[in-house]
Image (tube, rainbow, N blue to C red; front, side, top):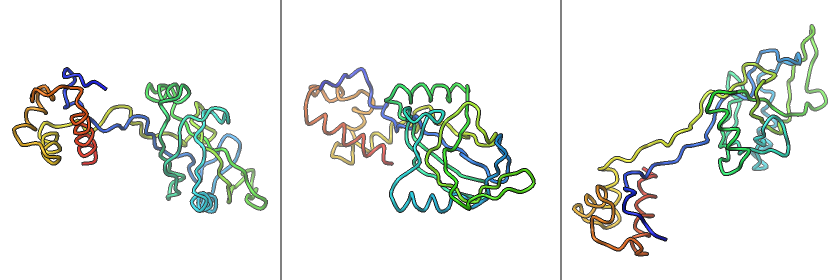
Length: 214
Protein backbone atom coordinates (compact mmCIF):
# COMPACT_ATOMS: atom_id res chain seq x y z
CA UNK A 1 0.00 0.00 0.00
CA UNK A 2 1.44 3.37 -1.01
CA UNK A 3 0.27 6.76 0.21
CA UNK A 4 0.60 9.64 -2.22
CA UNK A 5 1.61 12.95 -0.71
CA UNK A 6 -0.30 14.80 -3.43
CA UNK A 7 -3.56 13.72 -1.74
CA UNK A 8 -3.82 16.02 1.31
CA UNK A 9 -5.31 14.62 4.49
CA UNK A 10 -7.80 17.47 4.49
CA UNK A 11 -9.82 15.48 1.95
CA UNK A 12 -10.93 13.02 4.65
CA UNK A 13 -14.73 13.24 4.88
CA UNK A 14 -17.63 11.24 6.22
CA UNK A 15 -19.50 9.33 3.55
CA UNK A 16 -23.22 10.01 3.18
CA UNK A 17 -23.81 9.04 -0.41
CA UNK A 18 -26.78 6.92 -1.31
CA UNK A 19 -28.95 7.73 1.69
CA UNK A 20 -32.63 8.33 0.94
CA UNK A 21 -35.68 9.01 3.07
CA UNK A 22 -39.35 9.71 2.57
CA UNK A 23 -42.83 8.25 2.91
CA UNK A 24 -43.52 4.84 1.39
CA UNK A 25 -47.23 5.26 2.14
CA UNK A 26 -49.42 8.13 3.31
CA UNK A 27 -52.51 7.52 5.40
CA UNK A 28 -55.96 8.67 4.37
CA UNK A 29 -55.45 9.10 0.64
CA UNK A 30 -56.89 7.00 -2.16
CA UNK A 31 -54.40 5.39 -4.51
CA UNK A 32 -54.81 4.51 -8.18
CA UNK A 33 -56.28 1.12 -7.23
CA UNK A 34 -58.99 2.61 -5.03
CA UNK A 35 -57.25 1.59 -1.81
CA UNK A 36 -56.88 3.79 1.26
CA UNK A 37 -54.46 2.80 4.01
CA UNK A 38 -55.66 3.42 7.54
CA UNK A 39 -53.32 4.68 10.25
CA UNK A 40 -51.96 1.72 12.22
CA UNK A 41 -52.23 -0.68 9.30
CA UNK A 42 -48.51 -1.44 9.37
CA UNK A 43 -48.10 -1.80 13.14
CA UNK A 44 -48.32 -5.59 13.38
CA UNK A 45 -46.06 -6.15 10.39
CA UNK A 46 -43.44 -3.68 11.62
CA UNK A 47 -43.48 -5.31 15.05
CA UNK A 48 -42.90 -8.70 13.44
CA UNK A 49 -40.00 -7.36 11.38
CA UNK A 50 -38.49 -5.98 14.56
CA UNK A 51 -38.95 -9.23 16.45
CA UNK A 52 -37.51 -11.27 13.57
CA UNK A 53 -34.72 -8.73 12.97
CA UNK A 54 -35.77 -8.44 9.34
CA UNK A 55 -36.67 -5.53 7.10
CA UNK A 56 -38.72 -4.93 3.96
CA UNK A 57 -36.57 -5.42 0.87
CA UNK A 58 -35.52 -2.36 -1.15
CA UNK A 59 -36.31 -3.11 -4.80
CA UNK A 60 -36.32 -1.33 -8.12
CA UNK A 61 -39.91 -1.12 -9.44
CA UNK A 62 -41.06 -4.23 -7.53
CA UNK A 63 -38.60 -6.46 -9.40
CA UNK A 64 -37.60 -9.24 -7.03
CA UNK A 65 -34.39 -9.85 -8.96
CA UNK A 66 -33.28 -6.21 -8.66
CA UNK A 67 -32.54 -5.27 -5.06
CA UNK A 68 -30.89 -1.85 -4.95
CA UNK A 69 -30.05 -1.43 -1.28
CA UNK A 70 -31.58 -1.87 2.15
CA UNK A 71 -34.01 -0.03 4.38
CA UNK A 72 -32.41 1.13 7.61
CA UNK A 73 -35.50 2.42 9.39
CA UNK A 74 -39.25 2.19 8.86
CA UNK A 75 -41.91 3.38 11.24
CA UNK A 76 -45.43 4.75 11.28
CA UNK A 77 -46.02 8.34 12.31
CA UNK A 78 -49.12 10.51 12.11
CA UNK A 79 -48.65 11.01 8.36
CA UNK A 80 -47.73 7.58 7.11
CA UNK A 81 -44.94 5.04 6.78
CA UNK A 82 -41.70 6.98 7.16
CA UNK A 83 -38.62 5.21 5.84
CA UNK A 84 -34.93 5.79 5.33
CA UNK A 85 -32.46 3.57 3.55
CA UNK A 86 -29.09 3.12 1.91
CA UNK A 87 -28.88 2.55 -1.83
CA UNK A 88 -26.06 0.11 -2.61
CA UNK A 89 -23.81 2.10 -4.89
CA UNK A 90 -21.46 -0.85 -5.33
CA UNK A 91 -24.03 -2.56 -7.55
CA UNK A 92 -24.99 -1.59 -11.08
CA UNK A 93 -28.70 -1.54 -10.27
CA UNK A 94 -28.12 0.60 -7.20
CA UNK A 95 -25.94 3.11 -9.03
CA UNK A 96 -28.42 3.44 -11.89
CA UNK A 97 -31.35 3.92 -9.53
CA UNK A 98 -29.48 6.50 -7.50
CA UNK A 99 -28.42 8.46 -10.57
CA UNK A 100 -32.09 8.71 -11.59
CA UNK A 101 -32.98 9.90 -8.09
CA UNK A 102 -30.16 12.42 -7.94
CA UNK A 103 -31.03 13.78 -11.38
CA UNK A 104 -34.66 14.19 -10.39
CA UNK A 105 -35.91 11.77 -13.05
CA UNK A 106 -38.12 10.10 -10.44
CA UNK A 107 -38.78 10.12 -6.71
CA UNK A 108 -41.64 7.70 -6.13
CA UNK A 109 -41.98 4.96 -3.52
CA UNK A 110 -44.35 2.01 -3.60
CA UNK A 111 -45.01 -0.86 -1.22
CA UNK A 112 -45.29 -4.58 -1.90
CA UNK A 113 -47.60 -6.22 0.61
CA UNK A 114 -50.26 -8.77 1.44
CA UNK A 115 -53.58 -8.04 3.13
CA UNK A 116 -54.47 -10.86 5.55
CA UNK A 117 -58.00 -12.15 5.89
CA UNK A 118 -60.15 -9.53 7.55
CA UNK A 119 -57.54 -6.85 7.04
CA UNK A 120 -59.63 -4.66 4.74
CA UNK A 121 -63.09 -3.15 4.62
CA UNK A 122 -64.91 -1.98 1.50
CA UNK A 123 -67.12 1.10 1.90
CA UNK A 124 -68.64 3.43 -0.71
CA UNK A 125 -66.29 2.36 -3.47
CA UNK A 126 -63.16 2.58 -1.37
CA UNK A 127 -61.17 -0.37 -0.06
CA UNK A 128 -59.84 0.58 3.38
CA UNK A 129 -56.72 -1.38 4.31
CA UNK A 130 -56.57 -1.83 8.08
CA UNK A 131 -53.85 -4.46 8.29
CA UNK A 132 -50.93 -4.94 5.94
CA UNK A 133 -48.10 -7.47 5.82
CA UNK A 134 -45.25 -5.41 4.41
CA UNK A 135 -42.74 -7.33 2.27
CA UNK A 136 -40.89 -4.76 0.19
CA UNK A 137 -40.63 -1.07 -0.59
CA UNK A 138 -39.64 -0.10 -4.11
CA UNK A 139 -38.24 2.99 -5.74
CA UNK A 140 -40.55 3.66 -8.70
CA UNK A 141 -41.27 6.18 -11.41
CA UNK A 142 -45.05 6.29 -10.93
CA UNK A 143 -46.27 5.41 -7.42
CA UNK A 144 -49.83 4.14 -6.92
CA UNK A 145 -50.03 6.55 -3.99
CA UNK A 146 -49.09 9.89 -5.52
CA UNK A 147 -48.03 11.20 -2.10
CA UNK A 148 -45.53 8.40 -1.50
CA UNK A 149 -42.31 10.17 -2.36
CA UNK A 150 -38.64 10.37 -1.47
CA UNK A 151 -38.16 13.65 0.34
CA UNK A 152 -34.40 13.69 0.87
CA UNK A 153 -31.43 12.41 -1.07
CA UNK A 154 -27.88 12.65 0.22
CA UNK A 155 -25.78 12.56 -2.89
CA UNK A 156 -22.71 14.45 -1.83
CA UNK A 157 -19.92 13.86 0.61
CA UNK A 158 -20.72 15.66 3.81
CA UNK A 159 -18.93 16.96 6.88
CA UNK A 160 -15.79 18.35 5.20
CA UNK A 161 -12.70 18.14 7.37
CA UNK A 162 -11.43 21.33 8.94
CA UNK A 163 -7.75 21.99 9.43
CA UNK A 164 -8.02 22.21 13.21
CA UNK A 165 -10.28 19.16 13.39
CA UNK A 166 -7.71 17.03 11.60
CA UNK A 167 -4.92 18.43 13.78
CA UNK A 168 -6.85 17.49 16.92
CA UNK A 169 -7.44 13.94 15.65
CA UNK A 170 -3.71 13.55 14.96
CA UNK A 171 -2.74 14.98 18.34
CA UNK A 172 -5.08 12.55 20.08
CA UNK A 173 -3.14 9.55 18.71
CA UNK A 174 0.27 10.84 19.80
CA UNK A 175 1.55 13.43 17.34
CA UNK A 176 2.79 16.73 18.73
CA UNK A 177 0.91 19.89 17.84
CA UNK A 178 3.70 20.91 15.47
CA UNK A 179 3.73 17.48 13.78
CA UNK A 180 -0.06 17.49 13.52
CA UNK A 181 -0.03 20.95 11.95
CA UNK A 182 2.58 19.91 9.38
CA UNK A 183 0.74 16.70 8.52
CA UNK A 184 -2.63 18.43 8.17
CA UNK A 185 -1.23 21.07 5.86
CA UNK A 186 1.38 19.09 3.89
CA UNK A 187 0.53 15.42 4.38
CA UNK A 188 3.09 13.05 5.88
CA UNK A 189 5.67 14.53 3.55
CA UNK A 190 5.72 17.35 6.10
CA UNK A 191 7.57 15.01 8.46
CA UNK A 192 9.93 13.55 5.89
CA UNK A 193 8.69 10.00 6.56
CA UNK A 194 8.54 7.35 3.79
CA UNK A 195 5.00 7.04 2.58
CA UNK A 196 5.01 3.22 2.56
CA UNK A 197 5.59 2.94 6.31
CA UNK A 198 3.14 0.51 7.93
CA UNK A 199 3.29 2.59 11.10
CA UNK A 200 2.19 5.68 9.18
CA UNK A 201 -0.57 3.75 7.42
CA UNK A 202 -1.89 2.63 10.81
CA UNK A 203 -1.70 6.20 12.09
CA UNK A 204 -3.69 7.49 9.12
CA UNK A 205 -6.40 4.89 9.72
CA UNK A 206 -6.61 5.74 13.40
CA UNK A 207 -6.79 9.48 12.78
CA UNK A 208 -9.37 9.04 10.03
CA UNK A 209 -11.65 6.88 12.17
CA UNK A 210 -11.45 9.29 15.09
CA UNK A 211 -12.07 12.32 12.91
CA UNK A 212 -15.07 10.76 11.12
CA UNK A 213 -16.68 9.75 14.43
CA UNK A 214 -16.71 13.35 15.72
